[in-house]
Image (tube, rainbow, N blue to C red; front, top):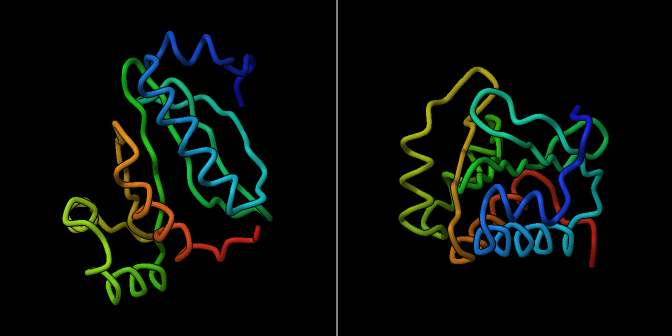
Length: 137
C-alpha cells in the first residue's frame, strides 16, 4: 500500500494531461461494467503507482502510472487463455500481437498494454469479460 493516494494534479504532473484523460476514460469504462474494490499501491520497480480493481480476493485488472506513461494489465489464466484464443480474431491485430509476444508463466499470461488513446478500449472490455462477467447493467 502507498501512504499518499495521488490526486488529479499529481497524476497530471506524472503522466500528462492527455494520458490522464485516457486513464479517466478507461476507469469510467471499467466502472460502468464492474462494481469492484479499487486499491492504490506502490507501482514496484517499473511504475510509480498501481491502481487495482479487485473483488473477493481476485484481481480483475490493474492500471499503472509512471512518468509520461500509463499501463493496463490483465492476467489471463489457463482457462481464460483458451477463451481468448478461441475468439482471437475478434481482437485487433495489435492486441493479438501483445498476446502472442507475452511470456506465459505458471499462473498465466501477464498482458501489459500501454494505451495512448481510447482505440483499444473495445478489446480491453472484451478481455475483462473473459476474466469476469460484468456485474453492472
